[in-house]
Image 1: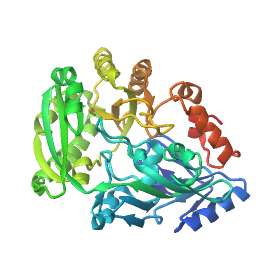
Image 2: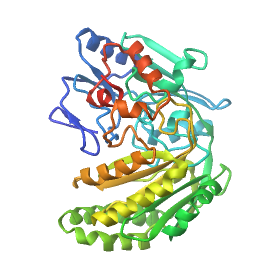
Image 3: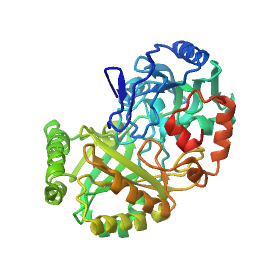
Length: 437
């Protein structure tokens, strides 16, 4: 997230706004005062975290609340694993906050720059057929309502709201505290290796089921899948991390530095993309290491891109993936970013992309200076045909009327929104499109 000359931009440069006012509350009470003032003036108000959503979900045309100063640990209980964090706390700071208590988050996505409130509110997820998205780790929240009141929601208080507010799109109130169910700290062994794409697709169910966490990347114009298998182990397991120099070469030099140059050059000379993709699968994706969970689950990504991701019934992943393959071949596109395939356990969060069904995810990307529209719109059509639900924080064109058909609890969510924010003080154009005005 950046602000230039009073204009807020998200990380991907796909959304921007010049808010009427920017405030930086330093406490939950400061958030309360800011919401009360905005409502009394008839203004909309929205909190932003790290700005890592690709959609306009965080755009704040009225009062923008930057939560950079609302970070840190509120409480932790090593015995129960319950941890309460201030809502603006960045994911990459959480491991150090949990370490003294011998705890860790159960699962993470592959990027850790987001705030905890932004990550859960947009449906951020990792991979693993036995693990849900980050919102499934939420056992309580405290938020400021449009009435300017503190509202606590957990198993003892307003429990019926928890499946809605744990993944609330920022539409129900401003989160100020998030309580997570954590687990004992653990390490992971990771095996990254290339495999023939056809073999991976033919055995994808077995591969996903046989590892705690499984995913793969496919660079278009190649016939190789870069697979990632991760196994959870006790914290006492001997760690064998990647050597610092090797990690720097793989992640900083090749995956980010050289890759940035090639992506930029590919905009001027698209023909260089296929040979580079074939080279990339030879130079990366073949390593084994054991390290703390957060160091294995997350990666450094500095090449700016734009992304669309759809969640599919797990049985539809392979046919949908094959359809995207054929689409790229037919159109003759030179796609510089890999396609990513991940998995998640079904859950009960009302607006979770994995609500009520085991899910597989297909994510497509374009370099941020490339126009993603033709590619994304064509892929989106395929995803919809296979029963896909779009990631709330990633680019898509779906509307409330279309999404209502995909979510059994959609009307329950909008009814709760009507109750908590009848005047739409937390709305913006994106929420009007996906939830209705």
